[in-house]
Every structure is written in C-alpha cells, then in structure tokens.
Length: 195
Image (tube, rainbow, N blue to C red; front, side):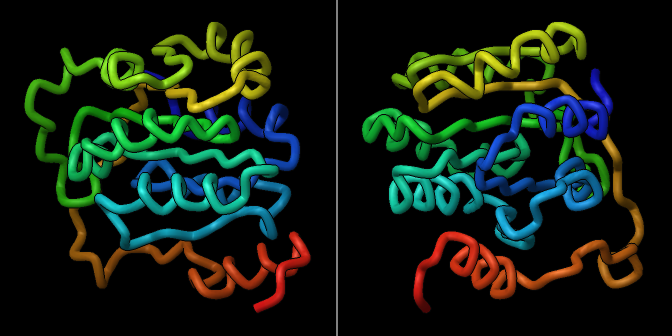
C-alpha cells in the first residue's frame, strides 16, 4: 500500500491546470501539496456524493480537465454513478480511487471484501474508456503522465495506507482552510465565470 502523500506528490507534477477535488482521510493531504488552490474544490462532508459532484463539474466544464481523488468508502455508497459516468463518457474526467480497504473516517471498520474488490475492473466493465490499478509508486509515477493525457473517463484505483481516525469528529484536527463556498467562488473567479 502506498502513502497517499507520495501519490499526491507524484501527481502534482502532472496536474497541469486540472481542477482537483480530493476526498476521504487520504484526501486531506492534497491541500498541503497543491500549488493551485484556486483550482481545487472542497467537497468535505459529502461522503457518497463526491463522485456525482465531480462528474457534474466535468459535464458542466467540458473544456477543463477534472480530477477526483475519491475514497472507496464514499464510492461504494453510490456505486451506480460509475454506470452514469460511463454512459456520458466525459473525456475530461479522471477518477482516482484511493483505496485504504476501510472506513478510516469512522474508526477503521473494514470495507467488506476489501482485498478482492477491483474498482478499475468495475469501471472498465461499466464502460470507462480506460482503467488502471496501482500498488507500486514507481509504476504509478511512470504512468501518470500518459493517464492524464488520455481521453476519459479514466479510473485509477490505488491501494493506500489507511489513516484511521478514532477521535470524535469535534476533537479532530481541522485542516480545511477554505469553505466549500469559498472554493467554488475562487474557481469561478479563476475561470472567469460570473456568480
């Protein structure tokens, strides 16, 4: 399993001007690594809906590359969305799934059948243009540039180390520096879209 910080650091060099949203316990590191916060969207607290929201962003902004770093627990709450994504074939959508094999946010409960679920195979079977699995950082590093240049939708499933949260939510370190509304307004400004 990979360290999500290493995954984000490798990805950053190939981001280009993509709009990025990162979810789950692993996704909280993206804000510390991103050098284009005006092109990052915060969807915290939307577990089960982040895939649909990022997909909607890709449909609404077809000339912008949209990248989602999803969590497998969130994706499983709305798994049918991959069929909808495949049906619409957004060429600008890259869907990463950071798979830590557990619900880390709620204490580390295991995802049922976690070791055997193949999210890339599900996406490819649903009709994604391409799908990949990675559990080796060097292999990911040598592939990510080509992946980012492919027509989507593309699924990239990556096994990552869990970062289990056991403190009550109110006692956890808050890492959000901008609200969801602020990130949306910043992106609108970046893209020259009026409110």
